[in-house]
Image 1 (cartoon, rainbow, N blue to C red):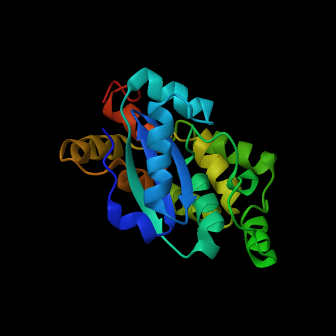
Image 2 (cartoon, rainbow, N blue to C red):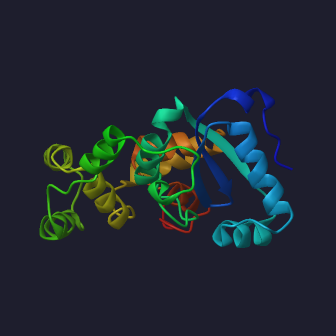
Length: 213
């Protein structure tokens, strides 16, 4: 059963729901009320998010983490950034399409627009993915990749990570992730540190990826 900390009743921020190796990211002015609403709707089989409801019906277990506490004015902006970073698979629509009880200011809309502006096109992404395939992660290679990644916009960088998420980890990375998971380290922290999706961390844990390591 999902236990919700009552101290979150007057706290606003961004949260993530976990169902097995699936995830959903949202934000709320009252974290306690929002997570409690999720729990109630799922248990009654009446959740508006059919992806989330079907996943819960299959596994019958759910947990959550608080990604960040922030002011109400920053909720949508922060939620967008975390969705780009973690790529949750249970979100049906973007935060800007949500029915939140407040409006985005022109400043917030501009920040989100700028963060999603593409500095490099599909051709550059394809060239980079091709150049990384099958290569050893030498120090020179890592330096060149770091320079390129810094010059990409947020949205392009995350698209690249999503397309290339099964190739950017070295054998040493995979072993280290499994060791830290066995020591009960949080999946969210590992996903953020290695810049890969939460579902990828679970697949490493369950040996659905990198089975030979």
